[in-house]
Image 1: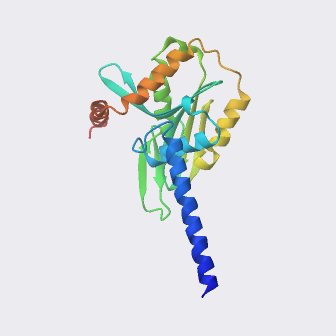
Image 2 (image 1 turned 135 degrees about the vertical axis):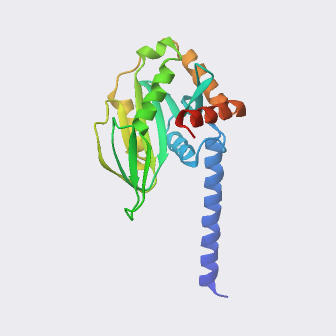
Image 3 (image 1 turned 180 degrees about the horizontal axis):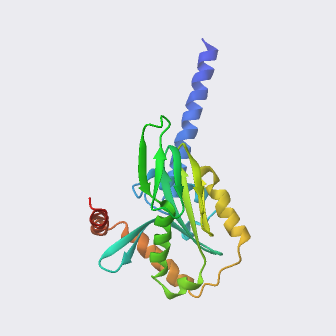
Length: 228
């Protein structure tokens, strides 16, 4: 008997078992917040990062659709209600170099070969608009601090990105939890007047993401606004 080959096979089987167990565990953990078909894979990875860092699942809300005037909706990737305020996440996935300023409408992605350039809407302004739309939902939001975190997944690097506003954080996915912890540690406890109303609003907005008509309306509005 080739004991070396047998030993290698046993190790491979054990590794496979560990991977399967981890995937099952992650799926069950994710389902305490959202469903496995909701949002993008990178959004779900960020939700898992938050959960594994110790953020309570009851305070994480994923794939929210906020009702606006004129039968329009604002879609927000992730919101976390914390003791120091509301953290709003915008999740992106890009490779290559990312150029832009915080106040520019569009940023530029340059791929490694430098021959391909793509423009995309400034995620700092995008998330700023999300926070404005969210603040309009409840009067008590006006007295609660908001923090904007733009998280980039993928093999990208920031070039000449400057003038990032206060309470706004632009980070690679590997540093996202560190930034969340810094926000929690370095800021005073927020004065919430009605936590239940805020939770109800965020839960309702997250449930909107299960409504196909709301999602279709949102996509239609995006196409109209951008002239698609």
